[in-house]
Length: 382
Image (cartoon, rainbow, N blue to C red; front, side, top):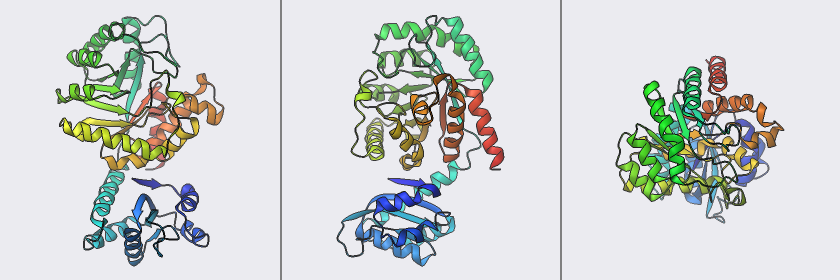
């Protein structure tokens, strides 16, 4: 697992790696360069990488006991300019020792990915259309087709590229509903929305295979699945034009906030995605049809949500687009004491920062606020 680090996080990462205390200030001075963390690197490979980077004008921070081989592996922090990384990759082509070829391939792919993401002209904005009476921020007892059309029109006017239609609340504590009730909520509205806004991609937020199938049969181009299953993967595999959003969750919305323990949060989510992608591959679903969502707020505490946002690049090596759904969620209130009615602005700010970090799709309630925030950030960085 590879992660692109920001300067403010370097000192704490160096402490975690286990560098000597004397070396930490030296490494910290190099934080203005490109800094990429890799985990579980064998001591032999770590030594080779350190020597290679030093020879090209970069450096690699490793555990203090790597050199005497008293640790079997180490997290490492590779530091250098873009050119240094390029030269190191060329040098590593001639070093076919141990796991170096695999590490080199992963690093080369990761670098290509983050550099291409930094050139994304704008994020893809997914507007949320909840057709539920009990959603955490915009539940409504009168979710009629007329309401759905009015809401969809507003999202399109604000600049939504995708409209994500959901007929079942997934807020913490929400109970699952019967598939027939969910179909009654979403089917007629999506038909009218598709007819009125044919240029807008439609997504269906469901984990029920029968609901997903009905949606696909009626023009849905994307399935946003909060709890993936073999059956859902098999269904999507039969429709080559349909994309699949795979979200990480433990338990169900009713139980998930009791299941927030992880051996290693980021590694556990990364492993879940790897396993799911392996299964998708067995069904011949190409990665360009798969979008990964780390599941902000789903079986995660507020500090865990912040950890995911800060380290979102650790999922880039998986080779799929990344979606983040942080809009109006409770962790924004917990970390900054912001009440629900005032969370659109912090949602937009975080969305713009995530886009600059390389996130491909932002799932939000207030599309216009996030679009404007990204516009300002783009201008400031141009």
